[in-house]
Image (cartoon, rainbow, N blue to C red; front, top):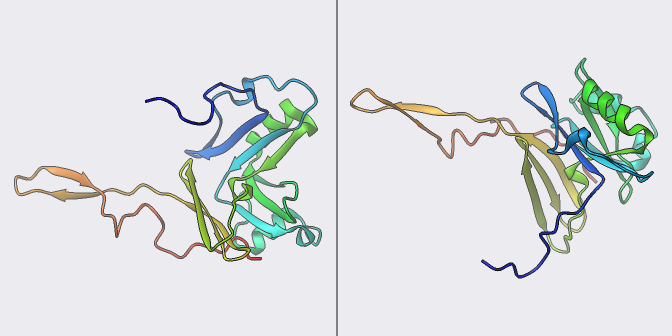
Length: 192
């Protein structure tokens, strides 16, 4: 099939993805082994369920860890809270694995800028629900004239097993009962 728009030409970018998987940490394909020449900032997208958006002025009233704790997402002992730069008056507050952050900061120093998929711009002139799924996480933003909700829901894989008449087991996923998402209502991450 012939490509109609866009470009498939690989381009060097100063971006790295940090994500928690299987109780460890990992980096994107090129990871921190790649070169990040020059003095340009390097954007590190943290992929973690412990993410919330707050108005920029709220961040000045307390530290990031306290804000996460107040929202029921206190950083675990092996985690540290970090913040993004403001984007249209909103700051992302995230908790990430200390060792992953240490490695990134050791390599990149003060050039590292943290971000999250929740800070991606969405053109929403009409009521809109934006969703992005990656690394076992579902990022959701709801707009109705302005941002009304932003949150992250961890995706858990659950399988149910049914035994057939001949005694063999088969794996299946029930779309209703075993959607892979928690049965509880997700916490409200940010409201504007």
